[in-house]
Length: 203
Image (tube, rainbow, N blue to C red; front, side):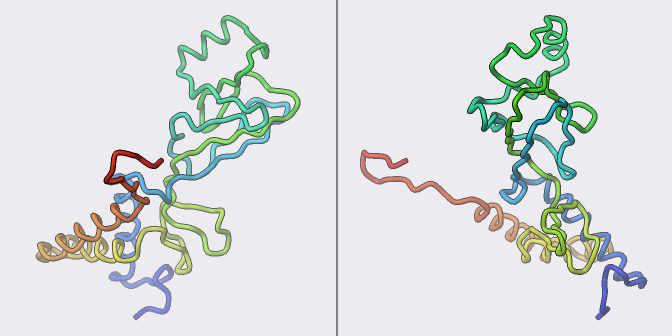
């Protein structure tokens, strides 16, 4: 057993390390996991352009709010809507903030004053959390101490399946084990709503 997989140079360790990254990135495409939902907080200044989170994939629809003004954000706008605003030159007369996503940034149509606190929920592509700085998420493992955010059984069964595929071994049992783990992980990923047996519903 190698003392460090991330720093190992033997072929088996390097293959397993690469397959781990493949597993994590593929699992992101199979389901919208609860651990991917994060909050992007922006405190505005005199500028209109703000960097997106490093693990940003996309914003969750209708979750953008101006917490200071207690109004929803309008966006992300498409290019046609953005050009219409620029052509009409509405300036800062609107009561709500409009934004577009451009070149890795969130761009506001105008800079509000005084400073405002904006919050938006987004889906992150980071399935690995840095052990030394838990605010850092990545879509690949970098160190042995990194924290994999997927359920351990799910990752283990998928890694076993990927390894057997790469070696050309029989994968029937491994695939069945992984599919069961995947179904269990998806089912347990979010709390379920209780249904009343009578005529009255609880919300």
